[in-house]
Length: 290
Length: 269
Image (cartoon, rainbow over all chains, first blue to last red; front, side, top):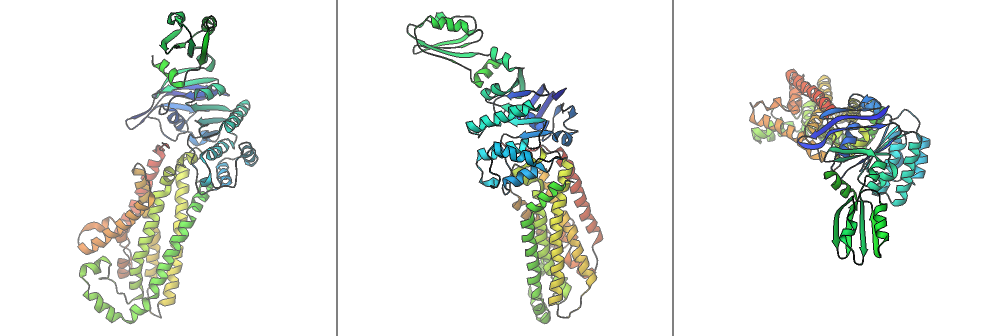
């Protein structure tokens, strides 16, 4: 059964575009990556699924139930970590978490303490005294403490230091291993690649591609730079090479295909420097423009 | 109705409610403590008042009340109590859902397994509880002030009850009108200016209505719907105006529910 099913979902804020004709589905137990630049409609999609906002047209179901008609029921099993976390400033962390837990008809106390320990959260500080990263940790604990079956993570790693990011990813993987379905929105391709099985790419409110992370990577362009003496631009005139440019004795190009073909060419040269990089997200998006 | 939200909302307003209640009590007690002086020199007072311009006396309803009588004097100070209660109730109304949105906690609350009807109902009941406590404090302080300082002068207890009973209707009006306005405007950035504006606006309208005489401004403002001077003078409510007041409250509440259930919660950025 599909956990999330989105059908031709469209949202306009007055005349401003939110998302247009978005359709996709997510299966149980998946970690679905939702990538796109700022303002592409990632948050709009999540907010529609949580019925924080109402669709202009189209529909969506979560757990097989319509999100507009069955919001409260659906949200019983949803955990949500917004991109920017804001909580009642005057409250203490522990009081906020208890307030959050009191909405669910199960005992969350043990889980609350486990999670806070993992995330190294100080429970007796005031929310207003917390740094951005610490608020984010509160958000993580708050989103997970009722053991939801579906997690919405909206750019969750912003503000977390690398160590915490790793802990957070481990936490998400552990949740996923227990069968939790994860909807992971991000504009950082790297973290999506590390975590997700399938990705959807959204641009200017429209889905431009949905594919397995493997296929995306295989189909992906590599960004290659080669610096060598007596470089000949013609030497890299291979199938799969695009945007070949020479600059101060360095060749830059994008390559798509079996990377061995390029490596063979390079191994025949006396190079001073070589780099083969993942393209940045922008560069991938450039690809989807063309 | 969600007990969790109700409790949280009530606690969030606890301090404000205590401050308003104590201020209202202090106002009643202090104001009424100088009643004996007024009453003793009633003749002198009336002479002095007669020298004030007619319009000024009308603005404070001084043309129809007798400051030397217990309820006449009480109705004069009741106007200021009403003003406080209007601002308090207006504030609560304006802030009821807009505070969550301006402080960006709406996402937290609305992603919980509760319906919007439950949220709004719980919030309304919590605010109403706070207002009712303030209301009771006004009752108690009024009885206390009158029994302490009336100095054996007689008054109509039934009329006093009518005045005090009008408070709840009055509070509900500002609570629900504040709420509906906050849902009609795109975003309320700060609650206080709106609350003050609504409270003082309604008061000034009523004062002008007195000054200008025949203008039908009293149709608009609860200070006329539940005019203390009128109630004391006639010993009853001005029923059509009270019904109008209640109708506005009910329509505001209905529209508020309708709007809130359909509202798009604004995103953070």
